[in-house]
Image 1 (cartoon, helix red, strand yellow):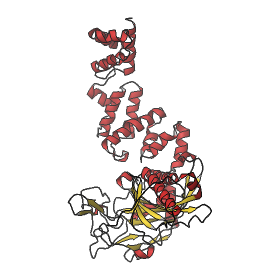
Image 2 (spheres, one colour; image 1 turned 90 degrees about the horizontal axis):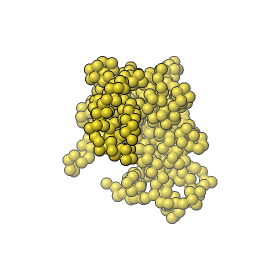
Image 3 (cartoon, rainbow, N blue to C red; image 1 turned 30 degrees about the vertical axis):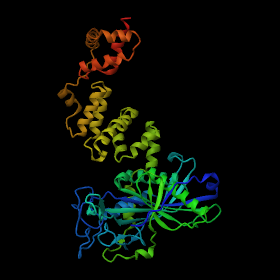
Image 4 (tube, rainbow, N blue to C red; image 1 turned 45 degrees about the vertical axis):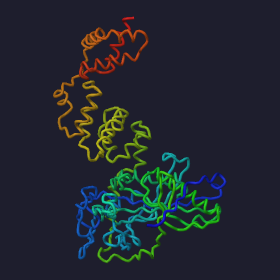
Length: 499
């Protein structure tokens, strides 16, 4: 275990910030949404019981041979097209040799020399949170295997290895060193994340590890070559907040070292978010250290122009185009559309449900009630049993005052639990008919006022919160079949009449 040398974030000040600038490049490791692994028929669901979704190839058993999953190639090609890059007509795999417990083969099959995609860019601007425009180039996109998962702390003195993740397909997206600030880096990651979710390539959940970020950081004096600094790599950054903190801390550390006359050593570093410190983990490997060689067991990938053109024609509308169109067409805020874009399938649910309905009410129910239920269930919309037809029925019943808001929420819960009956059938089954007879509600309210004279007196003395007490009592008496706004108005009128 190497000694961990810690460096906290230093306050370098405006003078140092003007004297030095940063050069930043990112490597994003994205798990692809393929049903099977990159080189085997084993399921790509890595979060099941340990060591259940594995094959002989994944375990590195002698005599087993990898067989390329074409679905992974298609997903990687979609990604590079969405990133404004070019699918390569010819690509090939290499072996990247290193020994570690989570790499059963003793090497990783990757694409160092001939990746499936090259070029492209991400454009940042005011809609992304910058007050200027910034184009960040994409160097390449390569297919490669994910590693197994090391599990610590189960048995003292032992590290357990779960091979479910070994061999899951990754797309590594390597940026050009065009990024200059931590904020640009975080916005770049967020935009790539939104883009890949939108086109169905990956769910990009950083908290689950399906999107992992490595950052290369160097600093240089203003006026020097921007690539003249010594770069350090920050590994496995797992949130936008951590990315910002790690980059700023490392920039400050390198500036402080240069100002004290120390050399910045090329190395791999980790980040301690709690103490806002980076720490050395090992010396930074270079290409010769990995002893790259062509992968002899996997043939080259040859792609035709017709295949690429067909794939290009199948690509959905870009997130930027969807954002602008939905803001204009439906009068939605940027925040509402971006919130929906962040959840795969959400914009489709909205557009299937909004026809003939109030867009703002539809988006409000999606972003508050549906998202609330998804969070409670730790579920994704794509895995939910709720259909657009059921959601539309719920909205129509609510709009027609057939059910109350509280009943609509109960119907939503039922639909997300797998309920197949219609809203109308649920209303009959649970007795949800709304009481719209004002005389009936007034009679119930009169009885409540007679039963609680102290609360009536309190209201008449200026304790207006007593109104909410009576509204709650009326809703309870009607088992939620009264509309809260009707209950409030009727009770208020009766109380005011007693002055």
